[in-house]
Length: 204
Image 1 (cartoon, one colour):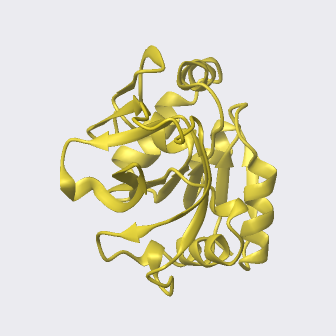
Image 2: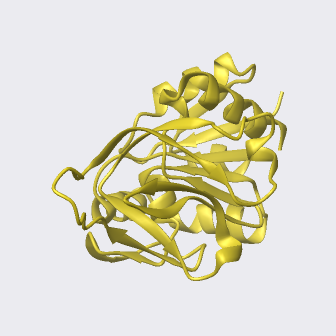
Protein backbone atom coordinates (compact mmCIF):
# COMPACT_ATOMS: atom_id res chain seq x y z
CA UNK A 1 0.00 0.00 0.00
CA UNK A 2 1.31 3.43 -0.92
CA UNK A 3 2.59 5.73 1.81
CA UNK A 4 0.46 8.89 2.05
CA UNK A 5 1.65 11.48 4.57
CA UNK A 6 -0.49 14.33 5.90
CA UNK A 7 1.97 17.00 7.02
CA UNK A 8 1.25 17.88 10.63
CA UNK A 9 2.53 21.40 11.26
CA UNK A 10 -0.13 22.49 13.74
CA UNK A 11 -2.91 24.02 11.62
CA UNK A 12 -5.93 22.40 10.00
CA UNK A 13 -7.94 19.25 10.55
CA UNK A 14 -5.66 16.38 9.50
CA UNK A 15 -7.78 13.74 11.26
CA UNK A 16 -10.79 14.56 9.06
CA UNK A 17 -8.62 14.27 5.97
CA UNK A 18 -7.25 10.92 7.15
CA UNK A 19 -10.79 9.66 7.72
CA UNK A 20 -11.82 10.63 4.19
CA UNK A 21 -8.76 8.89 2.76
CA UNK A 22 -9.73 5.77 4.72
CA UNK A 23 -13.25 5.93 3.23
CA UNK A 24 -11.61 6.24 -0.18
CA UNK A 25 -9.84 2.94 0.37
CA UNK A 26 -6.36 3.95 1.46
CA UNK A 27 -4.55 4.91 4.63
CA UNK A 28 -2.55 7.97 5.62
CA UNK A 29 -0.27 8.92 8.47
CA UNK A 30 -0.34 12.32 10.19
CA UNK A 31 3.19 13.33 11.09
CA UNK A 32 5.86 16.02 11.26
CA UNK A 33 8.63 13.42 11.35
CA UNK A 34 11.13 14.36 8.65
CA UNK A 35 12.26 10.74 8.18
CA UNK A 36 8.69 9.62 7.50
CA UNK A 37 8.02 12.55 5.17
CA UNK A 38 11.20 11.57 3.29
CA UNK A 39 9.65 8.16 2.52
CA UNK A 40 6.25 9.51 1.45
CA UNK A 41 4.91 8.54 -1.96
CA UNK A 42 2.22 11.24 -1.73
CA UNK A 43 1.86 14.29 0.50
CA UNK A 44 -1.09 16.34 1.71
CA UNK A 45 -0.55 19.84 3.10
CA UNK A 46 -3.67 20.81 5.08
CA UNK A 47 -4.39 24.08 6.81
CA UNK A 48 -6.98 26.34 8.35
CA UNK A 49 -6.00 29.72 9.74
CA UNK A 50 -3.45 32.47 9.26
CA UNK A 51 -0.92 32.46 6.40
CA UNK A 52 1.88 33.95 8.51
CA UNK A 53 1.32 31.50 11.34
CA UNK A 54 1.36 28.62 8.88
CA UNK A 55 4.74 29.63 7.45
CA UNK A 56 6.15 30.22 10.94
CA UNK A 57 5.09 26.75 12.07
CA UNK A 58 6.60 25.09 9.00
CA UNK A 59 9.89 26.86 9.78
CA UNK A 60 9.74 26.04 13.50
CA UNK A 61 9.26 22.36 12.72
CA UNK A 62 12.14 22.45 10.22
CA UNK A 63 9.86 21.21 7.46
CA UNK A 64 10.76 23.64 4.67
CA UNK A 65 13.87 21.82 3.41
CA UNK A 66 12.28 18.37 3.31
CA UNK A 67 9.12 19.68 1.65
CA UNK A 68 11.10 21.55 -0.99
CA UNK A 69 13.20 18.45 -1.63
CA UNK A 70 10.19 16.14 -1.93
CA UNK A 71 8.05 18.50 -4.01
CA UNK A 72 10.54 20.38 -6.19
CA UNK A 73 13.38 17.87 -6.60
CA UNK A 74 11.71 14.45 -6.18
CA UNK A 75 8.44 15.58 -7.81
CA UNK A 76 6.34 13.80 -5.15
CA UNK A 77 2.61 14.37 -5.77
CA UNK A 78 1.22 16.82 -3.22
CA UNK A 79 -2.28 18.12 -2.53
CA UNK A 80 -2.68 21.42 -0.68
CA UNK A 81 -6.02 22.03 1.01
CA UNK A 82 -7.38 25.50 1.92
CA UNK A 83 -4.53 27.34 3.71
CA UNK A 84 -2.26 24.55 2.49
CA UNK A 85 -2.97 25.67 -1.06
CA UNK A 86 -2.39 29.34 -0.21
CA UNK A 87 0.98 28.52 1.37
CA UNK A 88 2.08 27.18 -2.03
CA UNK A 89 1.95 30.72 -3.47
CA UNK A 90 4.54 33.50 -3.39
CA UNK A 91 2.89 35.63 -0.71
CA UNK A 92 -0.39 36.65 0.91
CA UNK A 93 -2.01 39.95 1.80
CA UNK A 94 -2.65 38.36 5.18
CA UNK A 95 1.01 38.44 6.24
CA UNK A 96 4.45 39.78 5.41
CA UNK A 97 5.89 36.27 5.27
CA UNK A 98 6.95 34.78 1.95
CA UNK A 99 5.07 31.66 0.92
CA UNK A 100 6.59 28.44 -0.37
CA UNK A 101 6.64 29.88 -3.89
CA UNK A 102 5.94 26.57 -5.61
CA UNK A 103 3.36 28.16 -7.90
CA UNK A 104 3.71 31.70 -9.26
CA UNK A 105 0.61 33.19 -7.62
CA UNK A 106 -0.41 35.60 -4.88
CA UNK A 107 -3.06 35.21 -2.19
CA UNK A 108 -5.51 38.11 -2.08
CA UNK A 109 -8.29 39.09 0.34
CA UNK A 110 -11.91 39.08 -0.81
CA UNK A 111 -13.28 42.63 -1.10
CA UNK A 112 -17.01 42.17 -1.75
CA UNK A 113 -18.87 44.78 -3.75
CA UNK A 114 -22.31 43.81 -2.44
CA UNK A 115 -23.55 44.00 1.14
CA UNK A 116 -25.03 40.53 0.77
CA UNK A 117 -21.57 39.05 0.07
CA UNK A 118 -19.99 38.16 3.38
CA UNK A 119 -16.39 37.40 4.27
CA UNK A 120 -15.43 34.68 4.90
CA UNK A 121 -16.95 32.97 1.91
CA UNK A 122 -18.55 30.00 3.64
CA UNK A 123 -20.71 27.25 2.20
CA UNK A 124 -21.20 25.11 -0.89
CA UNK A 125 -20.19 26.39 -4.33
CA UNK A 126 -20.12 24.90 -7.80
CA UNK A 127 -16.64 24.09 -9.08
CA UNK A 128 -15.80 24.15 -12.79
CA UNK A 129 -12.66 22.28 -13.93
CA UNK A 130 -10.67 24.30 -16.46
CA UNK A 131 -8.13 21.61 -17.37
CA UNK A 132 -8.35 17.87 -17.79
CA UNK A 133 -6.72 16.30 -14.76
CA UNK A 134 -7.07 13.03 -12.90
CA UNK A 135 -8.03 14.89 -9.72
CA UNK A 136 -11.44 15.61 -11.29
CA UNK A 137 -12.03 12.18 -12.84
CA UNK A 138 -15.65 10.96 -12.52
CA UNK A 139 -16.75 14.27 -11.01
CA UNK A 140 -19.83 15.64 -12.69
CA UNK A 141 -19.71 19.05 -14.32
CA UNK A 142 -21.99 20.31 -11.54
CA UNK A 143 -19.72 19.14 -8.71
CA UNK A 144 -20.00 21.15 -5.53
CA UNK A 145 -17.53 21.56 -2.69
CA UNK A 146 -17.53 23.15 0.75
CA UNK A 147 -15.58 26.39 1.23
CA UNK A 148 -14.52 28.48 4.23
CA UNK A 149 -12.04 31.25 3.32
CA UNK A 150 -11.43 34.99 3.36
CA UNK A 151 -8.53 34.93 0.89
CA UNK A 152 -8.21 33.50 -2.61
CA UNK A 153 -5.36 32.67 -4.95
CA UNK A 154 -4.55 34.60 -8.13
CA UNK A 155 -2.13 32.68 -10.40
CA UNK A 156 0.03 34.74 -12.76
CA UNK A 157 -0.61 32.24 -15.58
CA UNK A 158 -3.91 30.74 -16.69
CA UNK A 159 -2.00 27.46 -17.17
CA UNK A 160 -1.87 27.13 -13.37
CA UNK A 161 -5.67 27.38 -12.99
CA UNK A 162 -7.07 23.87 -12.57
CA UNK A 163 -10.63 24.86 -11.57
CA UNK A 164 -12.70 27.95 -10.86
CA UNK A 165 -15.65 28.94 -8.74
CA UNK A 166 -17.68 32.14 -8.44
CA UNK A 167 -17.99 34.39 -5.40
CA UNK A 168 -19.29 37.60 -7.01
CA UNK A 169 -16.56 37.11 -9.61
CA UNK A 170 -14.92 34.00 -11.01
CA UNK A 171 -11.70 33.03 -9.24
CA UNK A 172 -9.26 30.12 -9.15
CA UNK A 173 -10.33 27.57 -6.55
CA UNK A 174 -7.83 24.89 -7.63
CA UNK A 175 -4.30 25.37 -8.94
CA UNK A 176 -1.74 23.12 -10.55
CA UNK A 177 1.88 22.90 -11.60
CA UNK A 178 3.41 19.55 -12.53
CA UNK A 179 3.11 17.31 -9.43
CA UNK A 180 1.61 20.12 -7.31
CA UNK A 181 -2.14 20.58 -6.92
CA UNK A 182 -4.00 22.76 -4.46
CA UNK A 183 -7.69 23.23 -3.72
CA UNK A 184 -9.26 26.10 -1.81
CA UNK A 185 -12.26 24.01 -0.75
CA UNK A 186 -12.36 21.15 1.76
CA UNK A 187 -12.70 17.72 0.10
CA UNK A 188 -12.89 16.13 3.55
CA UNK A 189 -16.11 18.09 4.22
CA UNK A 190 -17.60 17.72 0.75
CA UNK A 191 -19.39 14.36 1.00
CA UNK A 192 -19.56 12.34 -2.25
CA UNK A 193 -17.64 14.92 -4.27
CA UNK A 194 -14.79 15.04 -1.78
CA UNK A 195 -14.75 11.26 -1.52
CA UNK A 196 -14.37 10.90 -5.28
CA UNK A 197 -11.61 13.53 -5.31
CA UNK A 198 -9.69 11.63 -2.63
CA UNK A 199 -10.09 8.40 -4.61
CA UNK A 200 -8.67 10.25 -7.61
CA UNK A 201 -5.72 11.62 -5.65
CA UNK A 202 -4.92 8.13 -4.39
CA UNK A 203 -4.76 6.89 -8.00
CA UNK A 204 -2.53 9.71 -9.31
